Structure formats: C-alpha cells, structure tokens
Amino acid sequence: MWKPILIVVLALVTGIAMAQSNTVYRWVDAQGNVHYSDHPHPGSSKVMLPQAQTFAAPMAGNTPMATPPLPATAPTAGYSQFSLAAPANQATLWYVHEVTVSVSVSPELRSGDSITYHVDGKSIGPTQATSVTFKDVERGEHTASATLNAANGATMSAGPVTFYIRQKSVLAPKPPH
Image 1 (tube, rainbow, N blue to C red):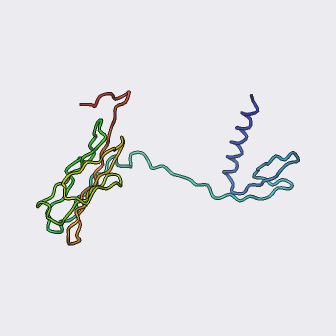
Image 2 (cartoon, rainbow, N blue to C red):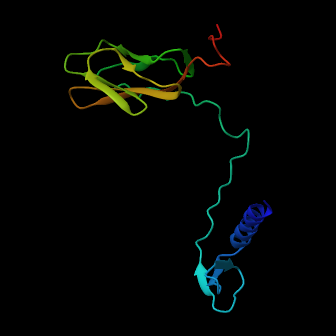
Image 3 (tube, rainbow, N blue to C red):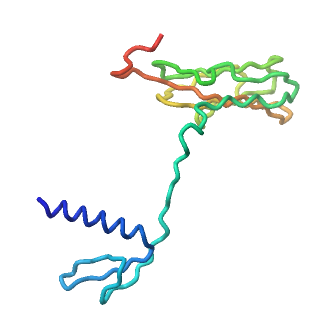
C-alpha cells in the first residue's frame, strides 16, 4: 500500500528538483533500473532539458468582460450604411439550434452586389439575401459578421458581434424571462 504512494511522492520530489535545474544526470543501476538526479553519480550521463515553459495569468479585473462590436467600415461602393441587425451584440439566445443573421443596408442592395455571412468561421454566401440562417449552432459563445461585396470590387464589413446560446440544463430548465 505504501510503496505506490512512496513512488508517487518520490516522482513529485524528483520532478520539482528537476524543474529547479536544466541539467539532469541519468544512470542505470546493476538491476537495470533507470535513475535521474540533479547530481552526478558514477557512470551517469548528462541530459540537457529545455527551459521550462511558464505562464503568467493576467491580473483579475484588467480583462474587459465584453468587447463592443466594431463599427461598420466607412461607406464605400455607394452605400451609406451596412451593419448587422441581428443577432444583437452580447445577446443570449435560449433553446435554439439555429441562428438567423441579418443586415441593414442603405440604400437597398444593388444588382451585382452580394453579401457573405460568417458565424464562427463558417460562411454562407455570396447571396443577395439580407438575412440567412445558420443551422446546428451549438451552445456557447459565438461571433457573427458580414461582408458586402460590391460588383466593382469594393467591400464593406459589419460586425463582429458576440452572442451566446444557452440550452436547457438541470440548473436552468427554463429561460430567465
């Protein structure tokens, strides 16, 4: 019973000791067991370890909770306005598996121009529809945006906006309405 616990404790202590130094010595004893140490032993060979990778977590409170949507690009290609109408930024959608993304375009979309819609890297378009539906969208955080492609090669972007999908759970059997 104690032997497995002792092995785990020794492994942890050895790991901590190895983390303190980049130089490790390896040797094999008479019974064929491999040993590692930060001190040289007779018959040991030097093993160089790479520098330990570290991570410093950001301080709490310095990270913004929500990023506001980027404004639509400057009017181009003869359009005065191009923006995402739905979903709203930071919207929470309850118990859905599909999301409709719509845009507002002024003046009306001209013949030859098109819109491509994006949700989490998936695209629908180019199309002349001012709204499309993405199916099989999982629960969690998502990002939507759209690109207006003018026939003359000019483009305008709308978004991105962040929205959330929540599903039924034991803790939340009903939406908070």
